[in-house]
Length: 506
Ligand SMILES: [Zn+2]
Image (cartoon, rainbow, N blue to C red; front, side):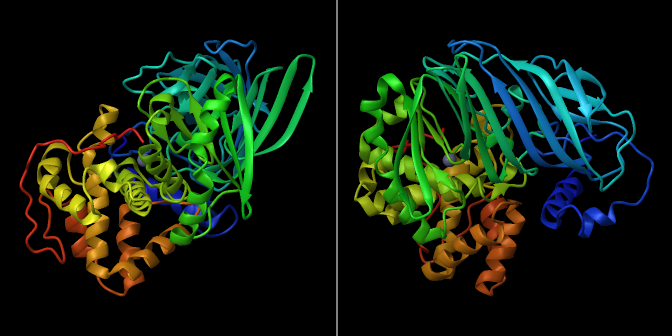
């Protein structure tokens, strides 16, 4: 299984998301047919068992309770998932790697369930018809946060001040049952119940807070669709500090209370960066933005939706290096979050673009040399070009990472710098104006959806009125680096010397 049917399934998710519940392909699926089990994975080339077949999630309503002021404590929760069946389902799976649950209901009626590794298998009393909406409620599950590994911060993570999420690509289901694949985006409501004196903050906008009996209960809503891997839920002794909005975009940062005076000033550039990115890529796609700092000395930043997370090693970098990293995470809100990858091989669409805007910000601020060791972007890309063949041999082509056995295999250097190099080649080919128009169109046409490398190639051709398929296919899937337009003298000459500023966990 997780086989040849996988690409069709991935496509079907996109169609159903686009078409909504009542019309189009979803309605076409609503013919009576023999119910069969939903598949245990979506067949992602790199993560075959991630996500689940047979349904399309519309919304998560997640409630989490933190009993004490203890960052290492086990957290308990309930989740209600509203979904549409995309086939007649005799049973279906959720991804889950925590403990429990106590009870599962489908449309309010008890359902049988069992655990199979990181799968929660749910059998409703009656089969679900294709095209039908349903709600699965998982009650009384729990999850224990993990002590941070500074070499590779990942998952539901303990910090000295509370817990936070660093779930990309495949760890959201360590905290809560979900369809944990970026091709199935959904709206979210997250409610945290924490002891008085602690704060609970999640992706999106706070819509309610209730205090009493020594507890604070807060609800956050993320109305634009979000991939599970991008959810942030931070709970602990943190403060939430508002900044002045940028147009209609609210801005707030979340930092450990004891470090607020020291850490908050570091994020001041984010308001100007929002204005700058809006000029380049179009309106900010969400309602709120800001930065979350955790006091763990790893070397990690992640674009968790509406609230990018930075560890203390990153916020300790000089402003000339930290701020381009902030531009990187902010640009992901357009490239990677609002437009999420259809499958994990498409990760270059996230990292190539974010690296591109990181370099642009450094150039704008006159800190490119401090960041990269090169005075101009052209000189930097010439160096990247020289290394490109050896990276392709080592890690696979830009849009076909060789493996995801280790996180470093997926988030490899060629995905970041090779991805940015492919964008540079495209800019060289079509010119800066057409290139920037394409960037805005990408963020607009696929806003709130998941999109693939093929979608990017198709839009690039459509937007520029040129057949760019052979050109981009060679750049994104070739094992050998194509000639660089406008620079016939550039040669790929594998020089193993390290580049400056190559931190990839971002
Ligand atoms: Zn990134």
